[in-house]
Image (cartoon, rainbow, N blue to C red; front, side, top):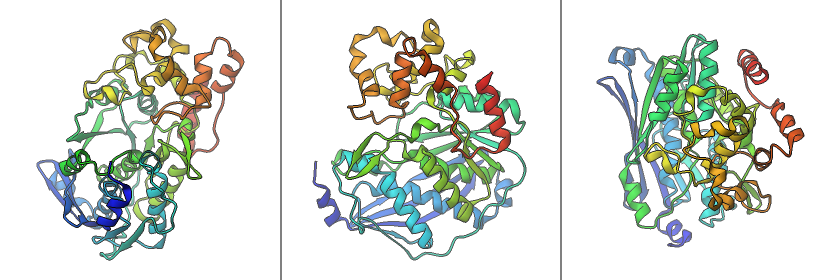
Length: 433
């Protein structure tokens, strides 16, 4: 691997050049242009399907442009990381001091796993300098009504959220994102939405510039980016286009637990799913983007509590998928920490019925003991996956021997959440039934 400092010296500036909007054949396309001086350029896109030309014309172009610009800021992280250029120059919009500080925090905390795995020292004050020289884009979206947009990733958490919301509210939509250039399967997301009874499914497509994949093959810097932060900005844009006042995520209490300490910082694979990021984004959104209410519906609960609720919804057993390795084929790989975490959390509630979700009983495979140990041992680095906390996974593993602790964790409620009262009442009711 080429040294990090080599890239910093050769590629000193990452530039967010422009974005353009186009709507034709029922598709809103946002084209982005980024470059790294010298000699590297990127042109990713995002497409939002199902919007007519007439509906597009009725949108406020200033509002839409502001939302598209900010989505471009988070999109750019995936390309900036290839060289970690010290200066980030924004040429197509203006950022004030608050925004620059906000984005710097996301570039540090949201990229923690990337820095840890690439052995990068991100602590110097001048590690990132963000400058902007473009036009002022400040028009915010103003939404009314009680429409609710749920984000659908095709897993058990999304299933619980969409199932409950569809019972309570009439105007529910589900946002499903597919990624081009990276083989992925979204059939589980579509099936989850369908099984929940949600009638409106909004499909978006993120088209990655293949140049970044080529750079990865040439040993440019690569690694994890805060994907849920991208979803946050995308959901605000989609909520404006299709008029959704409420945006309900399925991020849970368990995501607040980090993976490892590095250079004095807690590194959390799920940082952009945490309550800290949720609050940061809500503040940014209210100040610069929209009056939409963005919150995580499942924030009060641990993963094991969500698993208990999910275990009552047998119609989803065969359709959910949460495995990153198996997503290309739409299967559980049954070997990774994500598969094991999901299995362990569901097992106490399903036991013999677990094979209706997974192809086999993973506890019967002795080769998986090391993976189980990495998920529960306090002495090991927590796997860099969206998994439960070490404590709840330990309790789930030994639930028959730790019945008091098992009962206790199932009855907890985290008051650090942003649920509107109606949503809180709905979740509490389902939790205690």
